[in-house]
Every structure is written in C-alpha cells, then in structure tokens.
Length: 410
Image (cartoon, rainbow, N blue to C red):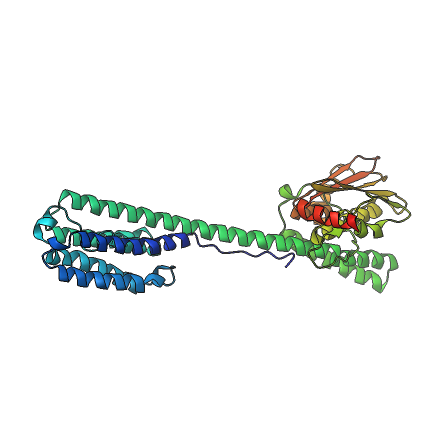
C-alpha cells in the first residue's frame, strides 16, 4: 500500500541450517560407506550394523528438526549429541583393537561434527564449546590415550565449531541492529508523510482562523488567539519528529494551502500535465510538452502537490498581483518542473529563520516530497529578482516509455 513502510525481518542463519541438513545426510552416507569397505576387519560387525541402522533412521527422522532454530530444541540437541557420543564409545566394542590404535575412524566418523555444529548454530560459541568438549572426552576415552591424530581431530572440531558459533552470534546481533534501523527509518518516513499532510491541511486552517479572527475582532479574535496557540503546539509536535535541520536544508516558507489532486489508484502512469493544468490561471502560466508527461501515480501526485505549495508561497510572500510561470520538461530519465515568479525574492536568512520557528513549508511540502521520490528540489532566490524552484524527479524509464508508445499509437 502506498505510503506505508514494511520492515521485513530476515534470518541470516537460515542458510546455515539448510547446509547443516545436507551435511548430516552426506555424513551418514560417508560413515556407512566407510564401514562397508572395512566390514571384514571389524571384531563385532553386527554391533556396528545395529548402530548404523539407528543412526540412519535417526538422521532421516530428525531432518525437520535441523531445518530452523525453532525446531532445534535443547532436548533434541542433547539427544542428538548422545547418539554421536554413543557411537564413539561403541567403537572399541565393534572394531578391532589394532585398527583403533592405528588411527581408524570412530563409528559415526564425521557425522559427529554435524551434531556439534547444530549446537554452534543454535546457541553460539558457548554451546559449541560445551558440545565439542564432550566429544573430545569421548574420543580420548575411545582411544585410551591422547594419540596425535586424535588430538588433532579434537582441536579441529573444537576450533571450527567455536568459530562458527561466534560468527552466528555476530550475525544475529547485526540482524537485530539492521531490523531496528529499518523500523526507525520506516517510522521516521511515515511521520514525515503525516507531517506534510498536517502542514497542508490542519496547520493552514488554524493559521487562516488566526488571521481572520484578528481581523474581525471581538469573540472572533479570541477564537483566533486559541487557534494560534494550537497552531504553535501542533507545529512543535510535528517538527519534533522530523529530520534534523542540517539534513533537511535551509528552506522553509510559511504555510501553503495545496490543492488536492485526484490520481487514479492503480499502476498506470499518470500524465503530469493534467494534474498541473488546474494551477494555470490569469497570473500563472503553464508551459508543457505536446506529448504526455508520464509518471507513476504516487510520484505525479507528490510533484503536483509540491508545485501547489510553491505557488501558494508565491501568493503569500510575493503578493496577489505577482505572476508565476510553470515549466515542465520531459527528459529521458527524469521530469523537471520549474516554478518561477517575479516577486521581490526571499531575504537572506528568512528560510532558516522560518524553519527554526517550525514553519516547514518548503522543507516538507516541497523538498520532503521530492526527497521521498528519490529526486531533488532546488530553490534560488535573489532579492528583487524573484524566486525559482526547480523540481527534479526520476521516472521508471521502461514503464513510462512503454506507456508513451501506447499513447502515441492511439
């Protein structure tokens, strides 16, 4: 829905769970194949066959449990590690003593690493350290002495699992920080949008009531005074949640009454010329291309509203007799709309002063709108020589060109 920001929460660890699922399947096939090639050398092969039957069933049955963090519970991790440790401790009973002393693999072989990695992905490096330590103790008990190859394998699993666990913790912290930043950005943009709507409607009504009440006097003057107080309070509230002054720019004009422009609520590009036509009158000239100037409906609406705000500033600050001109230029990648007047111009420092007072007409109604569209708004004013506002908004070239081609064929 237009104007709404959605914060999508991501899972940076989900690829790790998918990789772990595939690893467990490949590891059990490797362990079974390793046993099959040395079947005749086992002292009690039937014991190994029984263990591998349990290991295969367990691996396949628990694949959904290692699909994500929610399914991989602490009880499952404990049971999974127990299966791995049991296979290590059963190795001396099933395999020949000579093979074990010669550095032969344990029954689960590399499948044990998958169990330890599940601890790392689920609980971070601390859980990984605990699981890998238990595996190290079981391997030392299986060999009976700290042989070189056993120590090497134990240290390798220990370091790898702790490193992966630490990376997972860092990734989770980064994900939380990113999600929070996206939430803040979405909330800020929504507040700016609401602030523009308030500025273009409620604040202007209050300002008008204040002026008219003061002019009429009597009870109307009291009503105008109350309206002025509410205007100041509302401006303070609105400006409190906006981008700091250093980021907004130094442009601000006192209120602007912007005409509402109806734009069809669909995905078809809108002709900006039709939306700007109502602004043309005796003292406002409009120069536009002969072909449609197509923009996305939301972009066209915002540009038209920004032009209305600029014209309202002309009426308020240049006087009712001032003339203004609107120039529309349709470039290949952007649309440029220029609003120029023949008024006295804006005194130096007036915009910054108005923004400091909470009057954010240019900052919100003009520059804020164009910034949200990915465009820009430049204001040039020389005292005694009028004011010029240049609005630049990018357009979706493919969509606009396709729609323009259809329009020209009609």
